[in-house]
Image (cartoon, rainbow, N blue to C red; front, side, top):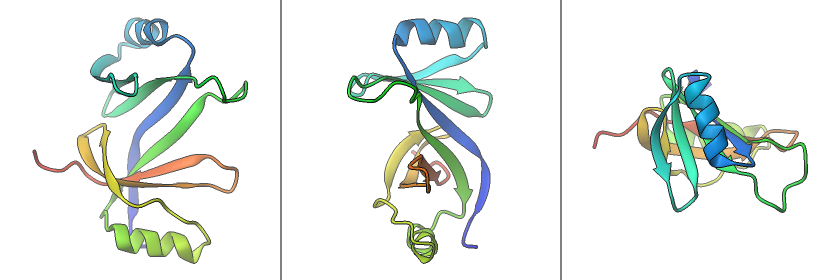
Length: 128
């Protein structure tokens, strides 16, 4: 194995009303807004050392789908080694790129599990 899963970094939930969902997670669960990516209309909420991200449900998606992806923080993050590992199992990852996560911006890549669920493997945050 070329990496070890450390924790769930974040989960991205589809919602039908961003403001209502934000109020719920802040008021009922005590989460705090960390960042609002206005370009994607994506809200990042702190949930302990992890995050819950809220994203408006695209109209073209079918009913019943409410999770966009789950991100797992892994160490070490060696994109080439992780990609080779996944390909040995017939899984084709995306090219790595920096994405925002619970610890800040850091490298990640994504792939689909056998049921079509998107999984993101996220490296540790990079120094500013």
